[in-house]
Length: 238
Image 1 (spheres, one colour):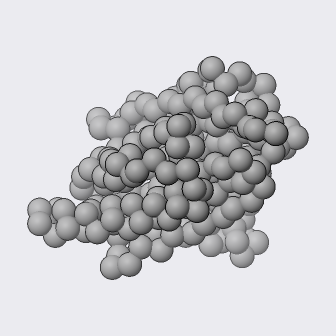
Image 2 (cartoon, helix red, strand yellow; image 1 turned 60 degrees about the vertical axis):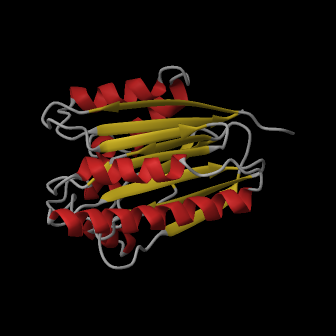
Image 3 (spheres, helix red, strand yellow; image 1 turned 120 degrees about the horizontal axis):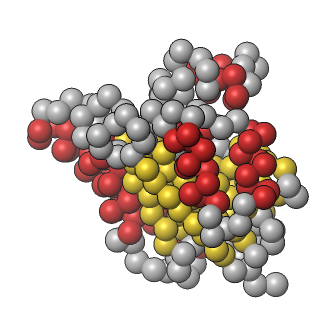
């Protein structure tokens, strides 16, 4: 059976910040989707996130999923080098961005990520977090000391431990798994999940149509304060 893919995306600056440091990218013909969050409180976070999507969008369109995966990985490392060079040349200090990338093939999904931008999957009406935050609180969750929902309320919830453009070497995590008809993926920056826990995300993903689901999620974050930029991409396999 040949799967088709539908997507919906939204991004908002929020109620507090003057600049949207998030960048999103949808390449449905290449089956690549990207969400990136420029590091808040650092110089030129918008440059960092835009550099990531600009580097990925220039990749050649190849049919081989393995080649596509390698291309995305190489693009992220190239973006890391470009961001480091920008920071060095401008003297702007630390510049960086989190990233999560979803790559789909006929029977598999694959994701790269660095930082605390997330990938969830809804399957059989149940939500699952596929990525693990590279953050201080993410380590506490992995150690069993907190749940992910509790981690959002922790005073160090914004302290990330990995990002593109930060450190000499970029450390990416990756995950791959099977793909089924009916799977729904959610990519988001932390401007969403700091306001909506697992139960609410699951409820919206179960009930909202693809045409409006991202806008609905963003609006819920805005209604609850919207203190950060918030970006969402939802992808359906049908």
